[in-house]
Length: 212
Image (tube, rainbow, N blue to C red; front, top):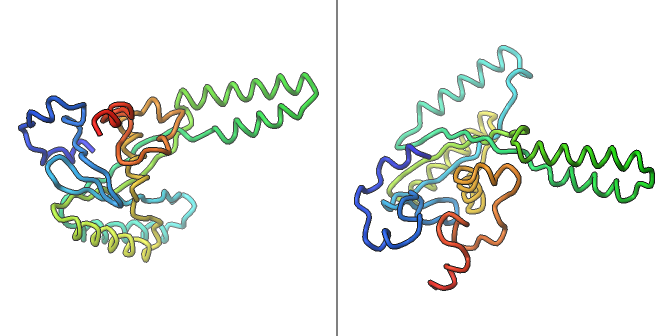
């Protein structure tokens, strides 16, 4: 994400100075399958699914690495491989334990379940249970060419046995949320009612309504 700032204009307009933190965040807008930076360049992302190569044979590993090199050598333009850790969402697991606890009459079992729920909550907040998200981010001046590029690359990667897909509007916002709010991302997900803004790093809902 930091490398994508290198093309940002150095001068900030007076309007941006009077605005919110949006004046120094490189992302100006998030639309379907792409983000728009402050310099009007567009950024699209590909989410790559992790693959455990330890389960592959030596021959399969070499072939997979060779395929990755082929794809990487064919990349053109500005791109960045972006990896970010996010805590695993344990809300479903804790809710399941709460349901079991509510149906249990044995006080000893209730105490054990309560201890497990507390331990799961502490694990989620501390960020001990992490999953790593893998993205390839591309920047281009022309949006149509950028979207065509990432779609072509996804097809090429899938043909070589690598799971991936183009990030949509919601997932790009979720990636922003994990990057800008690593502490909150440890125990909560991006709000569902996001509409056309990235909460809360630009403007809060009250200010959005006040400013139209």
